[in-house]
Image 1 (cartoon, one colour):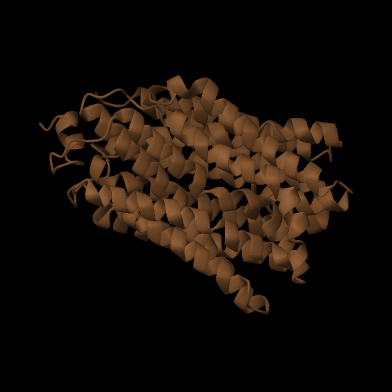
Image 2 (cartoon, one colour):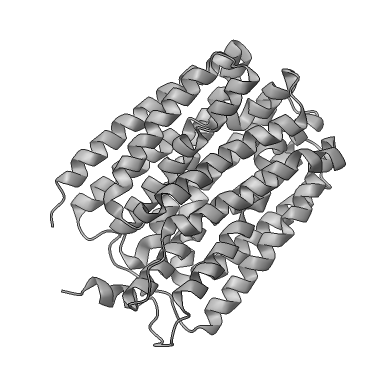
Length: 410
């Protein structure tokens, strides 16, 4: 039988001496912090830009949701290429594609052209997160296999939240400088930074020698672990899909309620700050797969409670408190699913496993976003009750995953 250490050492077959674990952690942290800066502006204000271009609620929902459906097909393909060509190389290509998409949206006119530009951006941005997670997990396993000091996944992942949080805190000021249709110009400028850090990461890993794993083989060690992975993916996808209403119409509704751009930016930033706090407080648990199911359950329960309360059209101070629950509904779900799948996947298929998680999340989020457009038109804030139901379904599957994990063969 091939030992785990021998398998994971295949990620660095050149025998080259790797960087010190602290230096590796620093490089991964910088990559995580910069790579997703555009998300902090895109998430709250891309729908506002769409509205400024004259799109209706239904068209906005279509532009946001339809690319998610395409991600279901594209992300596993991109992840498979990453397992073969190198994760950092494909990650840098995605960053450049995202920048090109924003450049295109800056000059196009009409619904069809905007839809195509948004599709390019969504496919590239959507593939970057599972690739970044797979790259981080590979480096963590490589450091462990070489006997160096372990790197906690939470200590790396928190910098993604810090980067997004920083941009969200600045988003109100940025939109003040680039209002309405000019929001897309700001997004284009911000997207330059991920291109730089991704290309540098690709060049650094290339200089370090061959590091990709051998091709072929199974995704997991046995069928029982594959079944657990499928249930975990389904649970996480439903919980993350329950965020569709707030992602698509949260900012629009809050602006209609008379809340200022600074307040809205702060509300989004508080959500990401709570996610960062979760990572920092629980980082010592994030290296252990044994805690992953518990995090997934916390995510489902937190999401259900959050959307149930949001359906009552809360006052501003309550809205802040509910946004602070983002660390539970999104952060715990993300960490639980990424850690569990990272432990279940064989080294040759880590990018693909994260790709399947991203694809399933995209499919469920797209369906929920399409539905949210109609539900919001009919019921307003009560549409959040449907999101709470989705979260409850995800929680039920998380409980089923816990049962499957307890019965895994040694």
